[in-house]
Length: 631
View 1 (cartoon, rainbow, N blue to C red):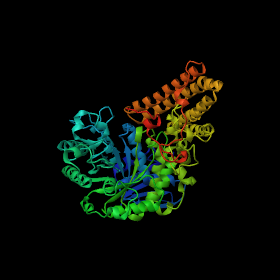
View 2: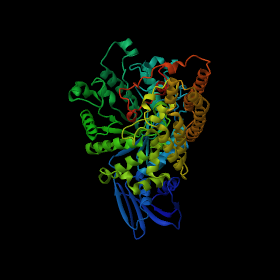
View 3: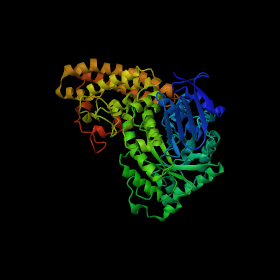
View 4: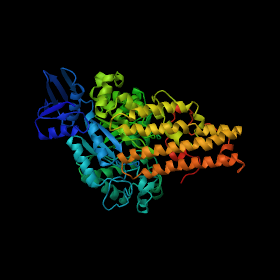
């Protein structure tokens, strides 16, 4: 590794660069190559001439990226690189509410990665996963962060000039506390607060007061998305039907009063303002749907975040941004780093959709660009699995004019830039997408095949009609490629081991139900005995290996809380395989007259209208595993 000698204006600059050694390959020495670090002007400038290196930044949060740029270009004799981020705030939101609550060392490592890429802020999405005094059941047995933990994270962000922004919920998505009787009085319906109830605002104030103690930032994301049934539960019973837009605005005013007492300025997800005026529409709004006098009541001092993770159409984003600007001039945008549909990420689709979103946001003058990493239905995928997407968004934001019309991640130099941070090339890291790509070449559409094929019941066969291609060879190939990267000397090798084990399992499991049904219909007893005595035991053996690797990944990154759900799911899969084995052997031996599930005529998959595995994204475990009632 190359040694450098830092000539810095301030001690904190040296300390910041020293911290980067935990991720980037360099050393510091008084005898090293001199690097002058200055803070002045705007943007980033990194130069090298006559073997003299100079880093000039406008803000503290640019130093890590500037140092990264220097290392990226160290092989050149001369360079003069200038960058200015296209957004005033380029941020990331990590979901800490879907069972995976990151351990502090993991979180600090992630912050360091984001700082190197050039991100300005981080939001930790905590529905109930922060400890609140006087609310012992808030985040109970959920791995909730303490004040001490969050203050440590806040201080680490500050080291890099990053802002740690609280991200909470003050209207809906509070589902985990609804199980406790003490909260029933303040629940309207489903997971929505009862607007107008004073105890609702007592709890919201405690949430906000806790955030004020935990965080130094006085920005806050107050959520308020997807409250589709607002005013239609207890509120309706107690007050009769009222205009739901008005209910929303009145509630927001009450929340703002609390925010102002603690010095917060707020951002919130924008969808409910539109949905309540446009019959539930958010992404395909028509002009006449927004001709309402009610729009004037939307507060002007709250930043509205338009969130959209799905389209590959620039005009779609541009039109919806223009619609947003009709009701406020404080508009931000939230894109997606798709890690929320199972064990494997969908980086390719994230980048294809994200590129068009970035183009529209730059054109429309959006200041806040947030990359969300949700963890829906159990947070199986590692937050590190979407590092390629984090890299992609950052490069596009800082070099927009140069890169917007290029497929730059296919260029060798950018692949090596990524490898400098992770120890694995960009194209190799993108192999983490591959367990979902069994029905297609790339995820320019999105599919979570590895999850629904894993949990597809071998006797019921809900997804069997989708298994049209020869999955064995496909998963064998993916297993081998992932296993090869797992041998690379990198802090992220374990991610590839986990998904290699998953592909090894799916190599045998993906079409198992199809084989069983085919042999049963033919009354091929020899084949069924082979499946029961040989193939199912092999699947069980591979399932154990996958569980072992997945367990290692989870506990390396996250607190233990929430992993019990994965054990229940995978343990249920194991027991169902044992049951299938026993039933098959009983039938072949004449112990039972029939296997009920296999007697049923197989219908094509119909949870969605389309039956195309390349575009199927079905993420709800409880619906994947069985048509039966669960819970």
